[in-house]
Image (tube, rainbow, N blue to C red; front, side, top):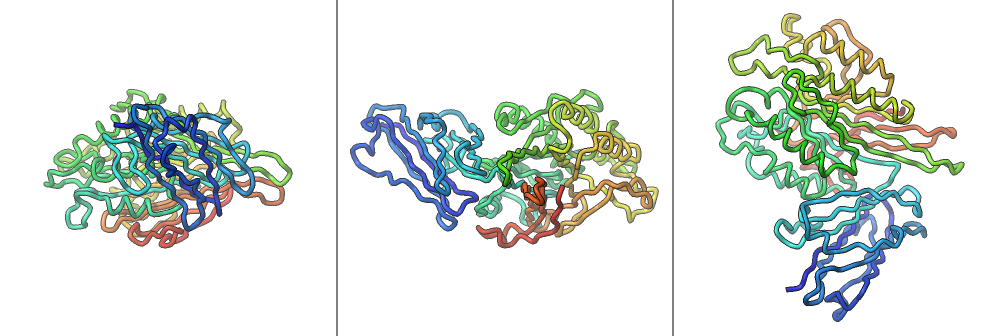
Length: 465
């Protein structure tokens, strides 16, 4: 039986992309005898190309070169010869290629059996895919979902969630990451099926959308439904450490304080833009997952009913944040980056409760610790969280008490317990009066309402840094 795999291309951002593939040693290819290949032209309407290729009988390796052309400018990856056989090995391999020949273009190259084809065919234990996806370097997208509460039977978020996966993947400009900020599972629940990873997260990653998952208070409660969530996050961090090199993954600043087993982590998103004077400007977005709540010491739930005491635990997330932010000071000037924090408990907490209950989820000292760190490193920082079950995005300020408010602002995301909502962070470098600014636009919408061209997303706010 001959070897082969799928060769795929996706135009995520441009009006038109011309793709030319040069097959080396054509006699090694099955279509060398039967011409099956047509170089794809990818437009806004027809932006995907997926072709199954076979090697000639007895052949294993299939080498090819790729040239991408946009607006008359071309990128040929330094005439690199790719091997289609790599797609049949391992699970998934990511790399970014920042084009030197095409302005404002970054190409995400992914290969392995850990992908579905662009047409949706499952590749596990099969041939695999070799995929090239074209994005803009000046505009990147991150998705956020929170409070999925998988296992909440009355809301339909049980069993296979492939419909939600397909709704997110329907976007032409699909998120380069999806962040899940806690309460992955509903708890308590009597359902045997509590595997959100098998039923939602893994299928989403098979669509080439890496998922940055973290735990919330429901995921920490004792009993049926959440006993293994921390262990699963730790296991996935071990995976990310191996696979997320292209994304600048880092978890080395976790301490063993407060029962922290290596839960918190960070990754990077880079943007660059060629200014009108020819100067190349670059900025980095530091994405940091702090899981349940920022803090240093684990404080038990003051209203514990026998199973909730560790729902307030922080596992020294502030310790991780402090060392990570300190490390950034040696890498680049502060004005060349922003910081996005992701955790579960919201800034205002449950401020409408009586003052006796206000610190239930987030102790007062821990709030001051976060405020101190952000002000110390003086870097534009915004947080994204959930916890309060609302079907719309809202702006919140960090509260030290019901009356005492800090200057830190964050975004409470639309939650997915009742209906599945995607929150979107669009990051774009723009030129204004000769200066390069980072523009952040937030939006949200029901996944069921999303269309290929961003229909169904409701814009919330635009902010320049």
